[in-house]
Image (cartoon, rainbow, N blue to C red; front, side, top):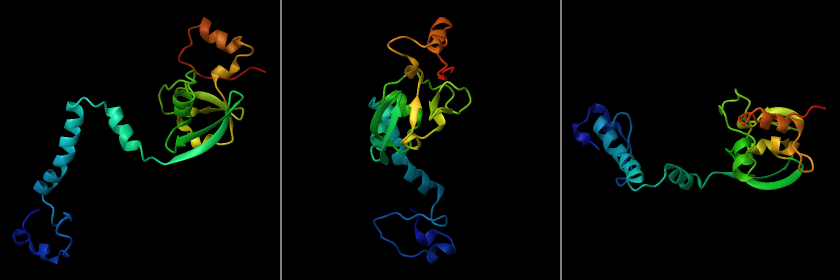
Length: 173
């Protein structure tokens, strides 16, 4: 930090603080102070890259303290009790935790429909639904359309027409 004696008249107005901790205020922080303070972040980022630690692993370590909630829901007729991070979307729960990969992540903005599932009988974009919102709900994915090991007409149409990206799962009554 710059010498208080060399700063403008406002520097003397700063309250005395713990000398070990650097306290910055708009008056006391110069561009040099800012750059010196951010240097550790730049070095840490470069070290992660140089050491070959995957960015996802570094983010997972940081996310280890994310709030979690235990939920129960029914997916394709099977009851599941899972602990989810509060920030997870329903599509992440289905694909990453329950291994139901028929639900696709397309645009991740609720525009394309590839993540559509039925929640309590209504179509929803699972990329814009938090997993915790599915607590107590019934969810049907495209995998849930099969009966007795036989593909439903909708699933068969996906296969015949190469509709791999679309995850819309609505049964005709």
